Image (cartoon, rainbow, N blue to C red; front, side, top):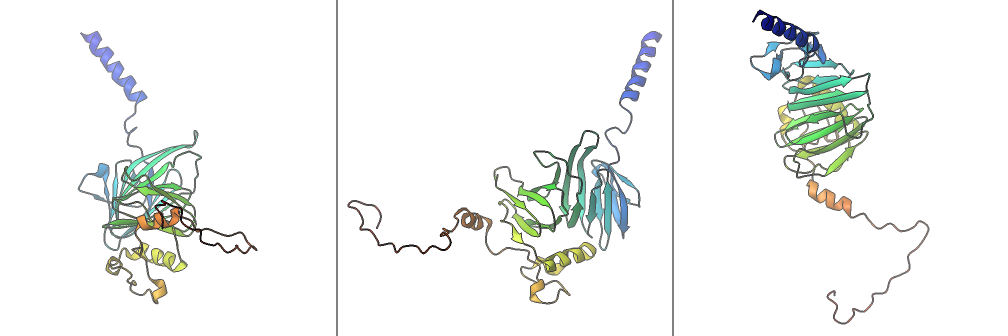
Length: 278
């Protein structure tokens, strides 16, 4: 009997050495900036604890910024995550192996405004840095995008880099690619809008909102945020054409004539007998 107990203890000790405590809960980032009240929900469980500079975050944790609060995280792959006031983010998965050049990141963004700066590019066929929202799935490839959440849609703004944007509905396979100074919106249960040009005024407004948070005036279509100035500074929250209409327009390209060539006049041909066309 004593021999069995002794062998069991040895086996437990060996398992502890092979699978040390905390292996599945390793620190993947630390707070480098905290302004105001920022809560850290360990494992996503309430109550949250006040976050402090250099506190670590692990997969499963949720970060919550309160009114007039802001937080920034430096991650193990040198990426930066910045949360505006009244935002909420979950670190669903964060795996990084620099020796093997492997990375698997999934961030679930629930509320507010967020910017990510992903500088380390790992050559993979599929994006390895994923942002999930209530309407969209975004694959980040070396870029510094902003993500703004509203009740019925996600807006994605890209000053520099490359993004793959799609609906989070698997039955909507359509995908758009964003490039430098472009933005799109992904309505709930709809495919993304085609990329639109992003203006310097929009970028400036986003930078302001990272400090103030989403202001009430942004809830209204075409309204200008307080202090934004002229109508040219308006922050577009809704695009004028539905995504479906825009896809149809893009799918049927205009017929372009060769340069320096005048087309010959076309005479209408008589309709053949029995034709179904006028």
